Structures are given as structure tokens and as C-alpha cells.
Amino acid sequence: MELTYDDLEDGIRVIKLKGRLDLEGSGSIDLKFTMLTATGKFLVVADLSDVEFMASIGLATLVRNAKAARLRGGQMVVLGPRPNVAAVFASTRIDQVIPVCTTLDEARQQLRHPPAAV
Amino acid sequence: MVDTRSRRIVSDAASLREVSAWLRETCASAGLPEDLADRLELCVNEAVANAMTYGYRDKGRHEIHVGVSCENGGAEVTLVDDGRPFNPVQERAPRFATSIDAAQVGGFGVYLLKEFSDALDYHRDDGRNCLTLRFRHRG
Image (cartoon, rainbow over all chains, first blue to last red; front, side, top):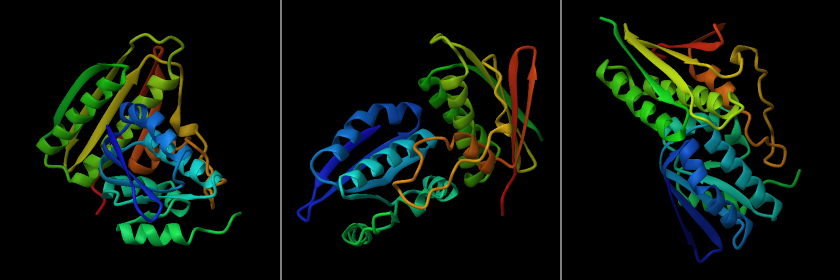
């Protein structure tokens, strides 16, 4: 699995994943992903448009990092999951706690108006 | 016509990827719809990853037998491993959170296995976990 990132001018960090978020894939990007949500920008877009498969271990990686962003006063949203990946978010209802966006503009809107603290 | 295939894999992440690819090829050969193949791939990943992660006390390589049978637009997968007894049917549903603060990290594997398959049978036989998953076209 490949992980790249881009820090946009408006303070948003877009983390792009490519490949399979399975046992092997999650293990290969876990440390770098954690570092990117634990330091620097805390408004994070996880771009999943090139993720061809996601198992529960991949979902756990995303939830853990979304919680990390939230702890720092920010938020993580997910961008462009394919149907099979989107189905996992929906079935587990994680799409109700991590916004799933179809465009970068939609992701920006979500990050500018995060949910109120619980 | 029934298309039945099987193979043995070892309990490591690379083998799990290989068997995923093999299962997708099998589904494609049988002309099964993509969404069925997606669900089958996810369920097998969850079941095998669970066995690999929790089924063995040692870090050694263990064999897992994977069988797939395609017929009448559906598929049946059998998974046999010699790990610790584990019956996914008995596992409780996860907690669904209403905020990211309350969300649990992990714990959705067995839930996904049940949600994305259309039937699931488990029994223990001669020291082995035997899991059968069935998939049919969901219109």
C-alpha cells in the first residue's frame, strides 16, 4: 500500500492511500499515517479513491486516526471511497461518525463546520 | 454446472492476498456479479485474518484450507483451520457509536462477516474450526 500526503494552503492535510487496506496494507502504512495525524495539520482528508479493498483492520486504522485528529481539536473526513469500501463504512455506521465525502469541496465544507464537542 | 475449487494457504498476510485474488478469479470465471465477489472477498478476509490473529498461540505457519463452489449464480466458501475453537455465530454485535469520541477502534470483523454473507454455518470437527459461508445475488 502507498501513502502520500499534501498540505493544502487552507490548512488541510490530504492523505492519499493507494492499494489494499487489508492486514498487510494496514500494517505497512499504520506508523506513517499515525505520525501524520499526530503532528502538524489536524484537519485531515483521507483520500480513499484509489483504495481497492478495505477490511475491518483498515477501518480500525482510519477510526484510530480520526480519533487522534479529534483529540487535537480537529477532524478527519474520508474522500471518494469505492462502492465496496463505502459499504463497509455504511454497514458499521462509521459513516455517521467519520463524514464520507465525494468531492474535495464537500470535504472542505465538513472540515470548516465540524460537529460540536460531545 | 458446479465449479468447485480448493487450495491450502499458510497463515500469513501474503497468502491471504493470494487467496483473495484466486477467489476473485473464480467468481469472475463463474460469471458472478461483482458485488457478490466483493462481499465474498471481504468475508473470507475477515474470517482468515481472525484465525491468523487470534487462532494460534505460536507465531508459526499454520495451514488454512479454503474451498469455493459456484453454482446457480451463487457461491459457497468453506474454511477449515486448526486454531483455537472460535464460533463467529455466537459473537455479540459491536457497539455503534454516535460520535467519533465514543467510536470503538476495531471489533467489527465478525460483524462484517455476518452482514456481508447470506448464510453462515460453523462446527468444530476433529480439532478444527469449520466455517461455511454462502452468498447469493442480492438484487
